[in-house]
Amino acid sequence: MSQHHADHLVQAVNVTKSFGPNKVLEGIDLDVDAGEVVCLLGPSGSGKTTFLRLINQLETLTGGRIWVGGELVGFEERNGKLHTRTDADVARQRSRIGMVFQRFNLFPHMTALENVTEAPVHVKGVSRRVARKQALELLDLVGLGDRARFYPSQLSGGQQQRVAIARALAMKPELMLFDEPTSALDPELVGEVLAVMRDLAAEGTTMIVVTHEMAFAREVADRVVFMDQGGVVEQGAPDAVLLNPREERTRTFLRRVKQEAESEAQHDIELATLLKSFES
Image (cartoon, rainbow, N blue to C red; front, side, top):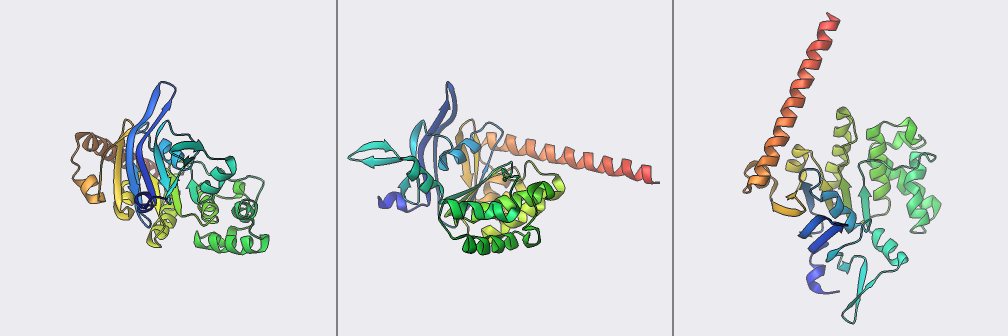
């Protein structure tokens, strides 16, 4: 392992990804240090989700390299040549990373407790008794200790997403990836998921978060990275990027987000007024 790549928990160098003729990522360079929270912002189609999926080997690189914990992701370098890692080795690498998706992807036939114990038992060989004890602690951590025996269909979207976070944490990952974890939730459930993520950040969990929650990014991120058209446009401290962006593309994006938030707020006011008129 070269010292250069061990300096950062995640290091991406000139990462490119194409799906056929469609170039989704064009030369991404990004480092993330242990304990850092990095929020990726940008319009739909800017490549944010694809970048997370490459880190977790749910997609294969077209070009460039990614290291996690000093290890080259997906490939091994032997005698100056790259060799594709075995499935078992990919699974080992992937077990160091927790990923939370937009959709909760819970096993519908398993209780919350069973969902959280499944991977430690089957992937890491943890005894069922130990896995169960840890799972109950994690469900407590995400505020769902009293819902351990509930099935996903008996839980709200916000509760399902918190179980998904507990499930990812059960593998004791070095890195947590969040792909718009609140975008599929009703607005009143968003806060409960963000609260869990705030707590994780406060505990020093390394996180890369794709999000459109600007207030969360400003409050929790150590660094905000704005992506557009498959590249990093600018990055820096949250206040610098969100309040005083250097690049016109960033300014345009933030203006649009602000307009959308304002029109949503106006819609909520009109709806509340309408409901009030029915009551009176």
